[in-house]
Length: 302
Image (cartoon, rainbow, N blue to C red):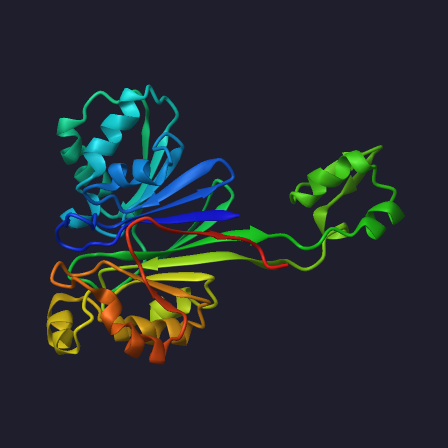
């Protein structure tokens, strides 16, 4: 199960009831954060979650509304006497940007490991999750992310018994590991069926519509996408500033075949995003307005 909380939905500047951009996910005892706008750690506490289990922070890009909450978050982690290392992932220049912000958060009691994205598409495995980073079309280098919880094939008790594999070895094989017993090597392929559909979340903000977004969000259980503007007369502004409208986001969700879409990263001038949703749902019926601390638990299909 992947627990998801959209901590902040604002773009450019925070508002009294709208924190800046951030998304947090919890899986199997660890937590992953994407972006860390102003107000992120407050939103985490209001959700009732903790900053301490966060072991990975991904950044889409380094505009202030996506990273301005980081120094305070790091200080809170340090003051909680955290010692376990923290991994940060982001576009080229990540270490330089974070070290500049750490002028006000020096002497942390934990190590920071930096992973800088240098290619258009980067894949990696993190704490049981598959992370796909893909470059999008913004005014600065910017990445979207897909987070995937893989699912192995169904365990065949019949095959395990036929091969004479002791029950105490089954769990090891089910987790994808080889096991040796009485001089014989047993592999997961002997007892597992074809890989099954996992859980997939795609997060993308600060970009123009791009083919790579629909491709990476294909069949996502949840597609969280920027909707900077709901007003149709803001299309020209969206193009000039490399952002998206609600309707463009809905078009991407439709093309991707996502199960559902949440809009986020609203312009400060967009006070009531819900008033535009009828036309958005005409394009993609499973579209929803994101709001601060909107949450969901994504689970495997039966």
